[in-house]
Image (cartoon, rainbow, N blue to C red; front, side, top):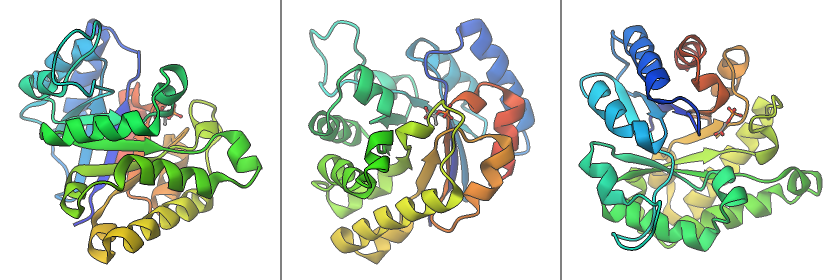
Length: 252
Ligand code: PEP
């Protein structure tokens, strides 16, 4: 069954004290649980993951890492492995975020390796992709998105997609206040789902959740989420305030 998911990417925000407050507020707001097909995920920074995983264990909030290294272990100063994540109770990782691609040089090829390592360690992946403003202006957005998705994911076997959530995040809409229109989001989501139909068939394509990310707020969430191929959102700025995040969750 395709799931409805709202995931909050906290990025490099919230120290432990602040994370404690936000987690407490979210737990209080979501104490009545979620409908069976709905999921809520938060992605705090590495240093707060252990705390977040412990504190949310008995709640309906799931915890994701914002990144991980592809190697099992070794001399990779400053990095975190998949095993380190699962060992502290974190079972989801965000990969391919445009900020990782842009500021840390992550390529489609590297992301394919990271996806493999995550899946091999039993992690679920929220895989992000999306075009730059210049790609959209030049009409290349379909080509860019197709290439990102195919290069990082299409070497996988069909069953792997049970553990993959897609997130379309047009770079021009991230943290800019400029949201893709619901129609623009739907157009790309339907296009990506069709890529899956062609490569893996209807069953896999229908079951995969495709989230939209890019300046989602309480005021625009419902309209975006109402589109048939939009299965929820990956939320940045608005995930940092419990009140806003909860309103977004309620609008799904
Ligand atoms: C993000 O970075 O994943 C994101 C969607 O950010 P924002 O909601 O702030 O645009």
